Image (cartoon, rainbow, N blue to C red; front, side):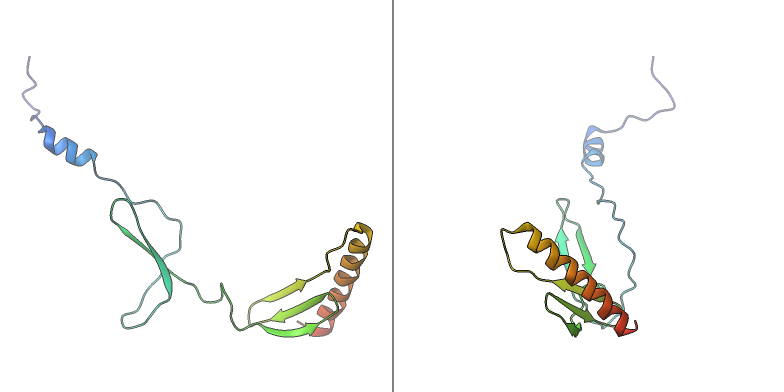
Length: 118
């Protein structure tokens, strides 16, 4: 028995449809790009030939950090939207001395942050 209502599908069309790859689903937020503006960013050519473009967001890699405090084992850098704290210690085999230096640096950092009036 034949189905009268169905039309046979050519095997070439089926192979073509089966070979279509969907681009990867991306959770990146949508950007509204303006004509004539140069953007920095990155791109990746996917296996299916689609080009995935990702412009860099402002503020994610700040280059305008200014050193506000330079302590013995810590430094505090500020920008418009970020506070970066960097702690540096001498490498030692004495774990207790390293713990004391870290504790002192954290306490001094709290005092310095309080003095900055952020």
